Figure 1 (cartoon, rainbow, N blue to C red):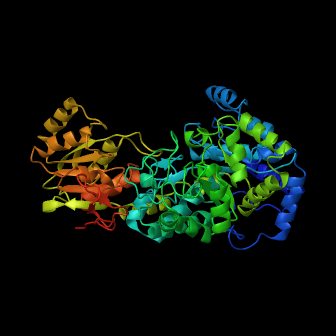
Figure 2: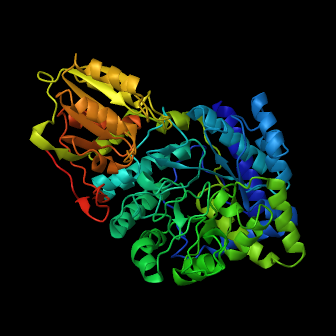
Length: 615
């Protein structure tokens, strides 16, 4: 395996050097540090820009347009995916595999998804990445691909165990440590790099000021714009120190909406002054930190564009604000063009053209690539788009690839994966960081910490939501097993998101034989059956400990609960950390990064930003 990878690396470097005059490649798997020439500050070296312009000059119109697209593709292999994945590729893209996709459309990037079967395990991911890069360098004009994924950690992670999983953004916001955020991003970036992934669609720079936000929530660092800005900048530094392009999202800010842009078109009704105060600081911080890329939002901001076009298609927002007012010079990528928020107004042929006119460089994941690719070519031939503008976009993309070492070292090895991915030191750091995130919101009467002598026999009930990548089992099972490792006798009973009366009765009966119960809650609402479950458990008189495993707002709906905590996610690393806090192995130190409002008086703060108890 090692010798084959070395041959591929040498071939890629030779092709790139022939096409661009690049320096000889580093050895496969060689570590690269933070790259110069950030999009905001230093200008790129003239030699790099000159050779990349020469590369662009050799491309056909079809090749130039193809380089603007970042596309999904099904399968674990670039050339030999499973039959079902071949069928899915033929149906959606008209090709059999990633290599054919690159050969036909010359796409500039590929995005990995778990549901597309791209991310089975680290060695396979590395082989897929190498196969994609081999196809890229085999083109008439050899160009490496920018392989990307959404590895935000927390509830959004495309690559699971044995890779290291860290707490998500809001959990890191609860810890409040720039050092922890930078470390998590650096380690996460090193592991992505080892698997051949050079762009991560993270960090989330949205300021979550709306508790009803259905699409951001715990993906945000919090509701304080300045605190979010500090952590965004720290993660940008961490990822890019590891050689991976960071991507702040979703510009101009998706934090104050109650509509999910995957299924509708959200409106943000902030005034220009409110936007400057609430939404802008994290993006300004990302730009100041030299971020490589920024992702657009499919949201309408009437204060900035009275046409009510979504920001992805809005020249006043992307060029007027992002480019001109904020001075951003890096790559702008759309959020997925398959989302309803960008498709609803103009359709799949017009959206990519309008996005490019607005100021976008990369077009992410169109639902029909042939339609989108053809529409952009047609707009160029008819003069709606200019070749000079397209070539400027392409130059920005190629400069990013060059800055991230892809023209000299596009490949990885199994040895590099084994050296970096999921190693003990990384896992230990993830555990230590997670322990600083768990937030104790309520502890009336000193219910916590639980004692192995007084509360030894535990029942764990609650929600077993679909696990994020890399979990060791349903949340109730992970919680019970971790209590068992700490010397408790714990039994798990999954009662679900909407427990039936039968399940509630089973939980009450089980608790009569136990000393205490831990309940995992998930986005409790006023009419949620989760409230009925907790009321029934409280009626037994046994200690009830509530753990919010997603949004921390649940406690406002649970007035009778005496002990309540927030873990901000149900990934293993956060659940295990929460158990250590509940069991008194660690003191709770997390502080709310968002306010929790009263359920009966939504304008009144129940727990402010910064609230958090300890023992």
